[in-house]
Image 1 (tube, rainbow, N blue to C red):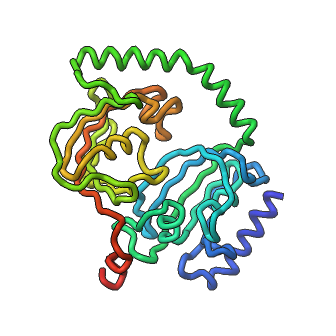
Image 2: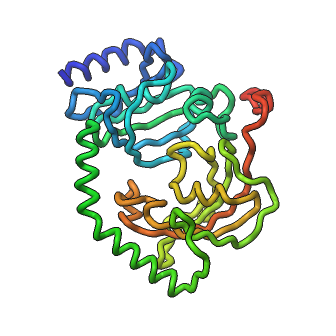
Image 3: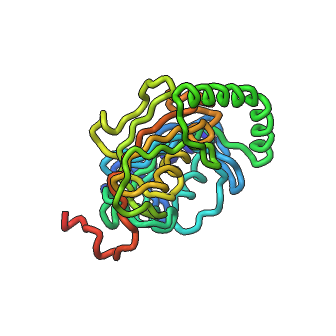
Length: 302
């Protein structure tokens, strides 16, 4: 059945090239989503509403400039509108990977409920890469979660000891907030505070408690821009810290794993499970979403 599906898709793709010359190699759904299957897994049945799905996902401009990449687990819900990203997840079976092209403006305005970021022009398409790692029913997910939490309980306790020792040795005299985050303001900012929906630009450097760096926008010489308050943009601790800052402010934050990469670690394997991390953050700019659509530069103006 899977082989027949692959052949059918291949025939359709070749026969419809003239129809979709705008995006060669892609087919189009009735709801306006362009898609290209990159790999077919062994499973045939796609997920259903209510299932939990674990995916590697990346968002990029139509020119393949990636602005988000990560692994996420979430419960599938009914698509809220035609052509939404929720439809993409429902099209793939376990082990499948595909590239999708969706309406960028609808994604940010309806899915994330915010404005387009600066790097996406009005009416721009958004490219989404998805690889399905696992599909579980709600019952399977709850059972796996309970068993895993029992197994890793000792690892969580060890992390607490390591973090406590670090705080004591470094003589850090600030108290953690209710989430467990240590926030140390290095330089005050005089600009606007961050609000939900703002297009935020930051420089950051991430390192382990031993001082070894694992990420740096300064070394890449490219600041990071994202929509504050939207899902799957940054780790929880970074979002919480940036939400306390003003434009121009610089801060150091110490994050326990539950505010970073948790009990699974990063998808790249660079950050192990149950690992506390440190970030140095500089808030460069926070653009309010309270502007008119007419103020957003169009493709012709650029």
